Image 1 (tube, rainbow, N blue to C red):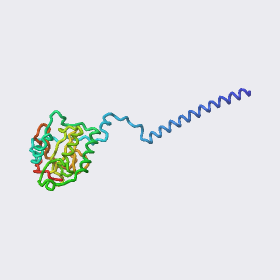
Image 2 (spheres, rainbow, N blue to C red):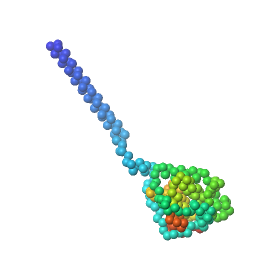
Image 3 (cartoon, one colour):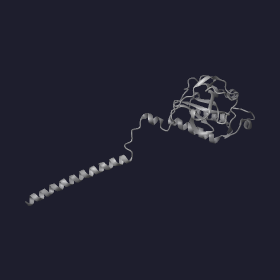
Length: 233
């Protein structure tokens, strides 16, 4: 009888140990489920397309070109001094792919040039109403600032053909120059009036014309009347 009792006690102890292990395992599983629910569930895997567009602006549209247009007179003078700046290479891409790296480059160049160049009118700077030139002395107006941005982006191996000088009417009804970057996610604008790189539709400007991509002729945009100068700071 004593042996039988001891044997029975031994079996019960093993049973209790197994039951405790099962209960602890179930409690751990429930805790893990609860933690997952509190954290919002398991994270969905990141798709390759999401990784390529992370941090980029929403895809927009292109500013469709219209009929050929005449550039402002100061552009022609600029091209006479810097002919390579106005030459179109048809082998270069007319549209660039907007990647996170390119987006970082655009925003960085826009912000740095805006901070570096002090705004001044052409009359105060050069003694003429409108002159397009590089602001190598640290002073310039809108078109000078955009020309410097374009030069810096070309130095960073961007296609010059996708970087188009553009004339707009600004928020106060004056002629103004911006740099249009033509991308696969729409046309983006670099502007000395803001550090934000914006889709062209969100600038609030009326777009008049820009450099063409197939030759020296410019093209009209939205058929708006063209200003005679872009002397706006």
